Amino acid sequence: VYKRILPKGEIVAIERAKNGVMQSGLEYKTEIELLSRVHQKNLVSLVGFRFDKGEQMLVYEFIANGTLTNCLS
Image 1 (spheres, rainbow, N blue to C red):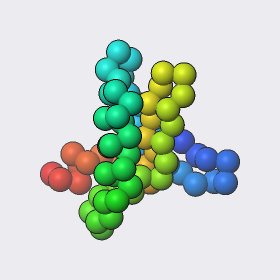
Image 2: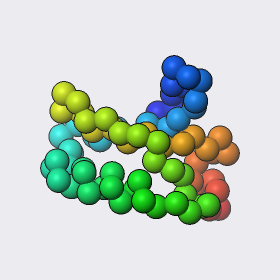
Image 3: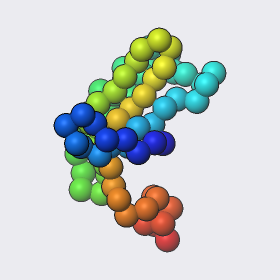
């Protein structure tokens, strides 16, 4: 997961699929549809996605309070 700043200044977290571990197009589409419908205060929201040149990326809102492991401990 990578922290990035979009051109409009929004800070996001980008999750890239590992090399050689890509989902099929249908699985990726289904995951995007599911994540775009989930809205819960304890979950980060899906901001966007990218599927280009064989790369799959999901873009989430950025949470600045450390990792999920830190929050759960």
